[in-house]
Image (tube, rainbow, N blue to C red; front, side, top):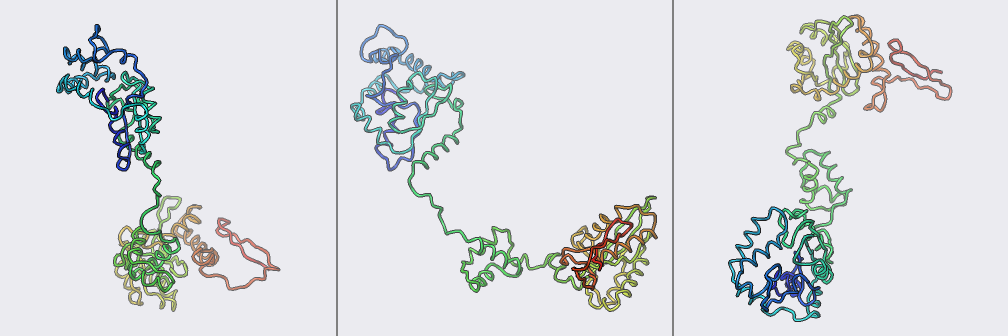
Length: 455
């Protein structure tokens, strides 16, 4: 801004004359010639006449410029920069002003303007079609609010007031960051634009197709994205291989070579009919004596075998319990192919030999990986929650009796979600419900209850 500008804000003139190239304008204290309201504190003084006074805006005079151009520059920038602690900024501005001459500034002031009258100026400003933000300071001593309001009205601009700022706001006078100002500008452009905001690219894949792709990949670990794509046309869907890959990648599904190896869950589920798992758990008596319990569980039926209770589980004792188990299983042992166990030192080589001699391979789970023996770990949690944690155990004989009764209940009556809410060994009898009544039978002194239909 200044006396030499052709429209006081060159950016507005450029936006009016080149509407196809202007995206938006941010104007600081703009004003327009010929049509702005008067400024009494400035317009009262003539620029060309010799004045008797040399105070204030009287210094905006060609004769004063010739005598003391630096004095005018210091007054002007003291008026423009009003914020406190701005001494350095004013000094730099005066130094920059002294790089020109009074004669050059006078010629610029007298240069022809872009418009000659009020009507032409108003018509030019109305040509501005891009979004405009007019920024003004609350302490502006150069441009009154009425002048800025007139320009904002003609350009349909949004006005931003900087509290405490002068005509030339300092960076720290802004109550917003430059990023915020740029965001406002982008929002104005978006509101002004009439171009349809359609998302570029292909149409999204239907949710049904996406779920089908993920299902095929999950159920077939060896299939890559091209194998999945080849299966889709048989089901009535056609997708590009790149689209199938993108669906799998976004869902976090690894390429086929990385997911061909079965997980422990997949392995145990597939081999459940032929797997036997074993483990220890401990019970502390009322006298703080620790007792060890060795048990086996058939993964397919969830049938549990508590084979031994002792305070001193040696390798010889554990091996003998393994022989006793195989003898009790008799012909049922012929269908077993794997035994899962952890790396406890109580499971000796002699223990493994008992099973390998019967055609059962021993699989040692990884160190510190209880999930690999999840079925046994789950039963330990069940027996503790439902039985041993709810009563005081006196000794080995007491614990053996309690576990024998609980195991009978567990195998013959307790329902299992994985077995369709049926026990491992369901009762064979069929009850006529029309003449039956519910009967309760307490287990472990009423700690657990069994219910059955009694005619």
